[in-house]
Amino acid sequence: MKPFLKWAGGKGQLLKEIEQYYPFGNGITKYAEPFVGGGAVLFDILNHYELEAVYMSDINAELINAYRMISNRIDEVVELLSTMQNEYVPMEERNRKIYYLAKRSQFNDLKISCDEKINIEKAALMIFLNKTCFNGLYRVNRKGQFNVPIGAYKNPLICDETNLRVISEKLKKVIMVCGDYRKSADFIDQNTFVYIDPPYRPLTNTANFTAYTENAFNDKEQIKLAQFVGEMDQKKARIVVSNSEPKNSDLEDDFFENIYSFCNIKRVEATRMINSNSKARGKIKELLISNF
Image 1 (cartoon, rainbow, N blue to C red):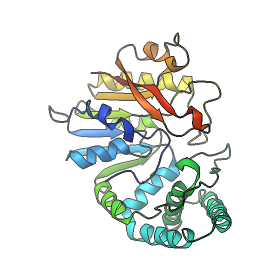
Image 2: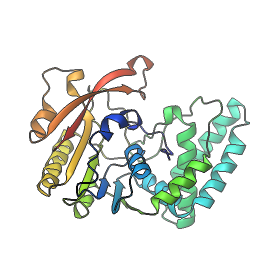
Image 3: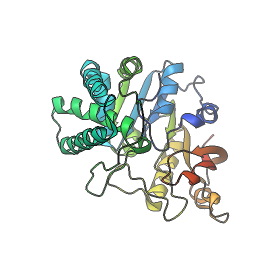
Image 4: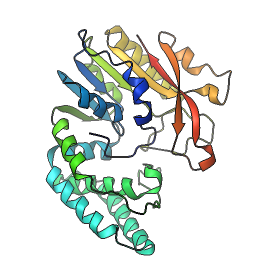
């Protein structure tokens, strides 16, 4: 089982580093991931462990809807994705662009609806757009409208049915919540491993070109998150937080050392894959912050 979406900041490449923190056994029988995103760590843990309870959440309503529809209505999702794949892949470039823009507009129109039948269509459209848009990026404007242009994939796998059906079975045991990370507080206790992967702090003033929701996650929000981690630390939960390394651009920037002074900070090497400038993609340092 692997993530069904390509997601900016996805942790597939850092799994080997994050796996070293897994504390399962020794009384740790639960897992919480309150910024699930593409779910690379969630799926890795579901692949390897049978836990007492698993909790995931995200503030992105369309993302959580996609997880829920895959879990609850997999046959309909697969049928819609198969149709879109069969229609889109044989097209020439010009017709692909027309088709893509129509689906993007349709997705934005459906975002305001909560109807169950429409939610299935909305989930399939989100997956289609993710597989065909530029760099698999999820970005919205201030009105909350998805606005990523078409990508240049020659033969995208829009419907990975085998993987989606495995995910569907695994997710049936997972608590799925759409909302703020603070909602996870009631689930988290001394038996819980928590992995927190918030929107990263931008390395420069111009780097924050990606917006996953209409709401900004600025330094004030990073500080509030660190305070939340401190509260969960008091519950004796095991916690790992990932974020950017400010010292990539400013050696004097001790922002995370200051707000996570009660934690251990490890610097790991990562490859930045999603960037509007191809020359800016490459090896950088990221942080893994833990309370143990």
